[in-house]
Length: 85
Length: 488
Image (cartoon, rainbow over all chains, first blue to last red; front, side, top):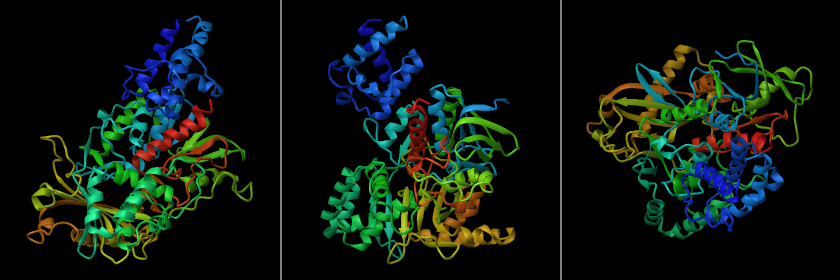
């Protein structure tokens, strides 16, 4: 999986958990929290959906790695690769 | 008929909070089952049928209503967490509500879902108080109401720092107390803030068909996510070794096991389910320092429902959605000495929401809620109970009518009435199991939801969120906090 595909995975999840947010102009290097109205409940859901849909585990200590789309891609791409995706 | 005897999570009660917790857990793959003693879902916000008519219990209006696009409020969080599209609830906004005080409702503050209406009403009726009122609103808006370890403050004391006219003070407290306070006379300021936002800064709405629509959506989500439920199958006992729940004994005597138990039965009620089997083995009864002692609530209510053969607008009652009233010099929110206290109360006219063009409720409805004393109702013999219902029905309706536009002829309401019903504190306990008919539960809340057993958690009114949106958020938060977030 490429980093761009990985970002798309995260975007798909956010689109499902926060359908009232406009995702069309997200800057990949800016914190998601600064561009969207996402609270800790929403971040929990991103983590839970990654596990449910893709079998990816994100321990609580690593939640800050999901701050922006770029950091998501850095952190998650190796995990997808390790799963052979 | 399912035959499982072990679940990852067992939920006690299929009310708003239990269903919401169940949806979260089932969505994330937990094997979960909701056990409900009654034959219908909804708990304190249910519905029932008599003579082919469906009546709502509890829900006058959904509070916390905000229009699409307003973010970061409880309604938005709830919709996201349960993956509900807001159109599914088909919410229709209130027309206008009022707080009416004085023997004939002489002083009245109108409010709508547009807060500026309320603000200008306060400015017009209490010109000397408006600056203080605005400061109070700022204090409410900036208060951190989600902090789990905020120091408890008296809401009366905080409000008096800004509002010095006792009449305005009481008029602000009346709706907030009636729509969620388990405490007599005063509220904790954090609770006041939550309610002030829910009623005044946000607002009222309702689906045309009432609470059934909301329950139908919740049930559909829960079923689609793979959740199980067993109806007419209450939990009689939580069997423990003193630290953990090992099994649940059901009403039919059978036993199931679960890794976690979430109980919406109430704080003291859940403690009783746990203590019922440890009582004789462990003394004193189970306690933990992080579990607050939750006494049963003292406040209960009665509600009359009057069905009319015409729309209330035809009687001249077409403008008010909800009216909070009080006829006395001070507003008294405490358990009455008598069976009912008719001096104050809440009128709800479900017809008066802004339903889409061409849609309307088929019959007129006029509902009145007043404070009631559980003990005065609980022990009456059946004929006396029926007679008391009749007597109080008439006196509640007569009291409430004073705060609505006068009728011509004076008996127009009676002439238009085609059916009536009334629930009492006794009805509440019978159908929901909540002790002493206390809809809002114990005055002491348990925000963390911990119980004496490490794998049993509370959700619902005794966990401490208010209103039906609060009830659902309670189930969501407890499922998140104790199970999903903990990675259990």
